[in-house]
Amino acid sequence: MMTQFAVADQLLTLQRFPAQQHNNLQAWDAADEHLLQKLGEQPLPAAMMLLNDSFGALLCGIKARHPELPCQWVSDAATARYGAQQNLLQNRLSAHDVHWLQQPAAPLMPTQLTLMKLPKNLNYFAWQLTRLARELPKGSQIWIGAKAKVINQSLLQLIGRHFGPATASLAWKNTRVITAVADGKPRTEPKPQQWPVAEYALQLRNLSNVFAANKLDIGARLMLQHLPVGQFQQVIDLGCGNGILGLRAGQLYPKAHVHFVDDSAQAVASARQNWQQNGLVAAQGHFYWDDCLTHLPPDVSADLILCNPPFHQGEAITDHIAWQMFSDARQRLRRGGLLQVVGNRHLGYHVKLKRLFGNCQTVASNQKFVILQARKA
Ligand SMILES: C[S@@+](CC[C@H](N)C(=O)[O-])C[C@H]1O[C@@H](n2cnc3c(N)ncnc32)[C@H](O)[C@@H]1O
Image (cartoon, rainbow, N blue to C red; front, top):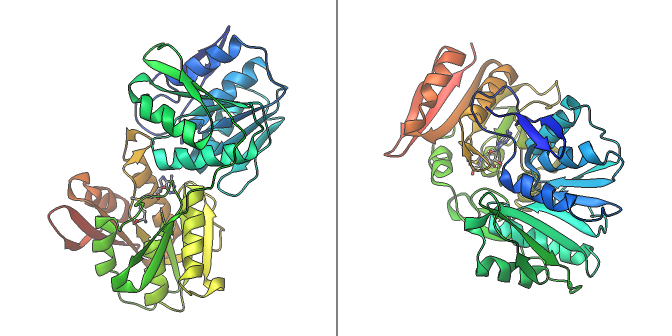
């Protein structure tokens, strides 16, 4: 795996987060290099904002050359933030004057220049642009780095509708940088998607970057039909998305405290809102923006963990998050506690669970998905 990232005359070591994952994926891409190269050609602004900077390649590149430049750093992913912090530390770069902001709630500082990576989810991108249009001064610029093949007229028009006029640079290493200029017109934020899950009398709201935007995931649907029967007291919805599994747990086990955890700040905010709007007991819902169960309070010891794990990180297909979720779950379960997982049949989660727990039972399956249970001995 390549870890040496060249910025001007410096060589940085950058790693994805968590660093020990066994894969050959790089922590940066050519669009990061393109953005930093363009920045090197301009007079430096007084302060900058960085958006969607996975693992801090942009931040480290800037801090290597301009340690005193104030930067606000905004990401929806807790792992991106931990990655950026880890990479700053590893390269002995100053975290001084870095303002770590968490979307969706935090107000933004009105900087003149924002560097942004194009997110995969264009609804989320449109939501980010409306926020920026509301909070940045007229004339403020955003530079958006992306693969050249995804930049087309309709993307430039989307930016024009939500922020201001946009033009794309020439291609370099198959990437382009779009320059968009704030036109000073505030836009109305798109409303979160709201949809019913009629069979469980639940209403769900999803902010724009949350998994399963406007309908139930088919794996989650199968999981909901096979939730275990029992008097559970402490339940964790690990990788909660909009919180559908934990919400149903709240209905089925009315005495239980339900802990919702997700890497996406928007997911955690959606789960919180869904818990409130579906009339579940406020004091029994707990919400954490985190990488798996890394920072869950030490006194939370679960008797049931529900998990529909992701099989990608950003654009990269990977099973390291599922592995970490299962091993964190094992640590957090009390003796006799259950981990119940849903996954695509071909992902082979039963092998991992058997290795970690020494047991694994198939609760249900259909052509595509399987529901597995492992019990902590
Ligand atoms: C397949 S979705 C499941 C969402 C929801 N539980 C459902 O069943 O519809 C996986 C979720 O895991 C979250 N996730 C990804 N990486 C994570 C990590 N390192 N720690 C916690 N959550 C993570 C994603 O943001 C996503 O919401």
